[in-house]
Image 1 (cartoon, rainbow, N blue to C red):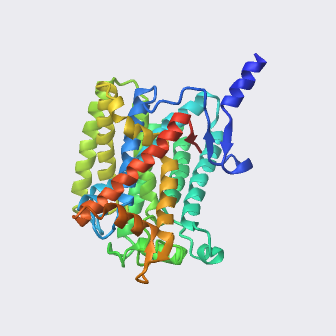
Image 2: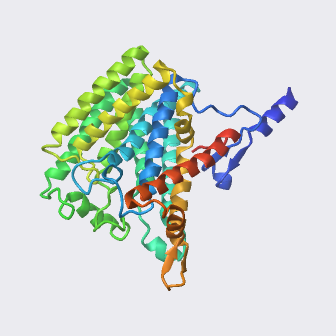
Image 3: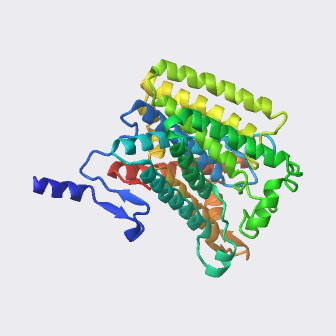
Amino acid sequence: MQEERKRTKRRERILFICSRSNILPITNEQNIPPRPAPAGSGRLAALDLFRGLTVVGMIFVNNPGDWAHLYWPFDHAEWNGWTPTDLIFPWFLFIVGVAGVFSLEKRMARGADRLDLARHAFRRGMTIVVVGWLMAFYPFVPFLERLSRLRIPGVLPRIGVAYVLGTWLVLAVWRRRVAGVAVGIAILLAAHTGILLGTGFDLTPQGNVQRAVDLAVLKGHLWKNAQGWDPEGIVSTLTAIATMLTGTLTGFFLKGAATLRQKIARLLAWGAVATAAGLLWGRALPINKNLWTASYVFFTSGAALVALALCLFVVDFLGWKKPFAFFFTFGTNPLLVFFLSGLLAKTFGLVTWTDPAGKAVTLHAWLYRGGFSWISDPTLRSHAFALVTIAFWWAVLRVFEKRGWFWKI
């Protein structure tokens, strides 16, 4: 018995990236059948598929060969309005909310109390924030210069903060969680809308209140491509939390006793209503990702409900799992591929040399011109580079998947 325990421990050894801190472990489960991409629970398998689709979309829109040549669906709306690309980030937050319900209930079943869960959420969320800052800080030199202008907001910092505050709210109202979370969403949307419209500012890129707050608090630490505002700024964190909580409400529903047919039908219906409400509200309060307006929350959460319903239909109702194994591979290691793909893309832009004509050439430009110049259409060529990038990361993730390595926080 003791020998068997030793063998089990050897098989399940944990490789910690950050030494003693329990930060970002990768589990190595060799000699144990790798965790299948389609999880055992139909609901979780559908969520893995939805997550995988979202990750693939993220990699595609983040890695064109040439940012000057994009088809319109694969670029963000310049200000008001939306494109399919503008669905990706809120879908990640929605998925965090859904998955959080399963995680909380699992830990409660193991005996964790709400204080333990609140501490765990804080550690996990702040780890995500720190990973985001490390990505922004890379390549770390010159150290003081980069530190002095480190971007504090960002995608991962927003996810981390939204996860912590959203989870704390859920735990605070746990006894009446559905009603409590619904009220929390309403308060967050109302508060954000009131700040946007009731403080004497307008909704233009240069005149909105979020820009004023970000410049007052984080000047010098904002997104370098913007003119004084940040798409993941302080004020819009309120509605980002609301987006996550719409996923939380969905998770409560999926954990309920409704039949599979009822779940699919209701998610489709609620999604259609929320999407339509967002579009209608957008006539008065524009759908705007940069401001993360309340209409944007309704619209993107409604679209997420429809997408999740379709994943449930495909995975659970039809039983089609193997045809979508490609996406499940991305869905089981999302943080790993976000982190590594971001660092690699940045590295491709940092590695430079001078060509015979005396012009500086980046590694990205060299690979793009050398490997894709045979495609005559510049926009098609740009997106072909993104498709190859997706194929590359799928191959990397398949190695991790076969070995049972999953980056966990």
